[in-house]
Amino acid sequence: MKAIGYLHSLEITQENSLIEFEQSTPSPTGHDLLVKIVAISVNPVDTKVRMRAQPENGEHKILGWDAVGEVVEVGDAVSIYKKGDKVWYAGDLTRPGTNAEYHLVDERIVGHKPTSVSDAQAAAFPLTTITAWELLFDRLQIEQSTAADTRHTQQILVIGAAGGVGSILVQLASKLTNALIIGTASREESQKWVSELGADHVIDHRQPLSEELEQIGITSVSHVIGLNATEKHFSEIAKVIAPQGKFALIDDPSTPLDISLLKMKSVSLHWEFMYTRSMFATDDMAKQGELLNKVAGLIDAGEIKTTMGQHYGIISADNLKRAHADLESGKTIGKIVLEGF
Image 1 (tube, rainbow, N blue to C red):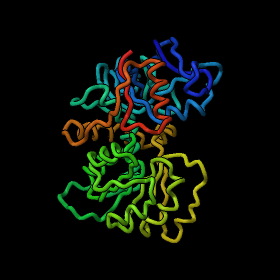
Image 2: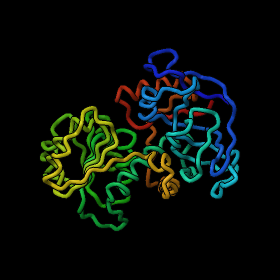
Image 3: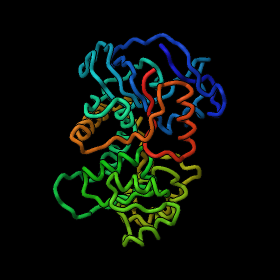
Image 4: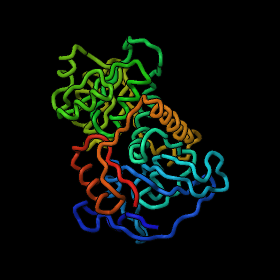
């Protein structure tokens, strides 16, 4: 099968930063599905792994975790899926990635692909959907509600709301909670995007968050979610979060955070890393498959729209290099997807 990976961690501008090669198609055992990859999306984690994880034993390292595809073989312990099923998932960071024609994945972290969107549109969702869902409902334990209650007993400040995770998180929070949602974005087009996704307010994170919130009549928020550049905003986060509030982040701060700033308000801090369940084979790892199926239902009901930003063409080394470079620039809106070989 054809695959795309690397032998050495290199800057994306270098010729061999990502290369195409051939290798044997794997066979599924146990809970594994063998999936024929149809479409993928590219995430910031792909670029981070490329620069930080040196391949071992002279073997290529295959990146990519978001995928849509068709089950072509199943392992002997598989009970949920069968050959011919269309699936979507975000994979397992400890295993070879989805930038290949065929891929092995544990059925417990897989969902049925939503039927109302294209393969490319669906590929934009899994990793960011799992991250956003776990942030809201597992880490921060935001109350879910479908009642027509317009009282905003909780307020969620989402820093970096225009990116991949923010784009689905704002939608999930808007559809499944009664929280007041304040997203941050710095450019006119990204601010418009966040507003269209369902944010009640959009503020500019280039300005002090406390001042921006004050301008819209908000003095504090019960929950803060940091999706990027957390170290730049942390002092302001500590200032605007309410006593006994909750703060969660997903990024890798470039400098240590002084968490003592949270002490006087008894604020709790939560990390979200969507690979934890698959990496440690936790007892509840099947929750990722379950939530993917719940979101597929929301998409098919017209409640959630794709977060696909741009389609970069076929799955090739050149197109993946372009995607990595654009993600590293920090100026993308929505998700970058690739489709077919």
